[in-house]
Every structure is written in C-alpha cells, then in structure tokens.
Length: 96
Figure 1 (cartoon, one colour):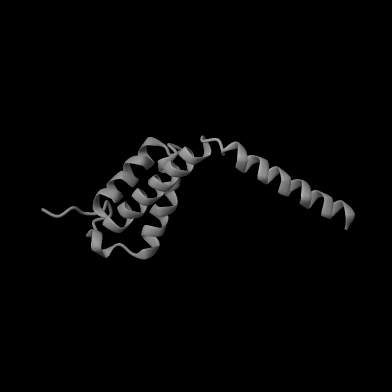
Figure 2 (cartoon, rainbow, N blue to C red):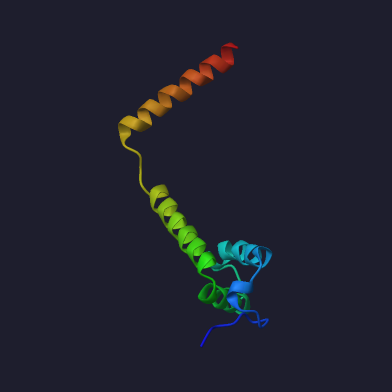
C-alpha cells in the first residue's frame, strides 16, 4: 500500500515548491521550534519523500558536526598564531 500526502497526492507528485516549503521548516523542526501539529506534518512528509529525508539527514548531520566543533578548544599554538596575526592586522589598520 503506498503512502499519500495529506492533500491526497502521491509523494512523487509533490512539486519542488511544496518540498521547498518543507525544507524551510526542517531547520525549525531540527531545532524543536515548531508547534507539535506542524512537527507532525513535517514528519509525515519526511516519511513519504526520500529527497527531503536525505536533505533532513544532511542538515541534522551538519548541525551536529558544527555543534561538536564549536565546543572544542583550539590548540594553544594555533590560538597564539591567530592572536599574532590579529595584532599585525590591527597595527596595519592603525598605521594606514
């Protein structure tokens, strides 16, 4: 038995514009910023639209990697080199 979109369309009949609306909501869905009723609609769409599900998985993975990267401290040697470069730029700006 094939799944259908809430408006009765078969998933393959969804237009790019309809998927674009869902893809815009996915960011809020990942961040738990949608009302529960909207979450249910997005979940249903993801269950029936593989391209959107793949984009959702990619967004979730990227968000996870960025979050993990932001919590790690840079090595002290790198931090020192960045500070030196920042000071060099500040000196050039103040002299210019």
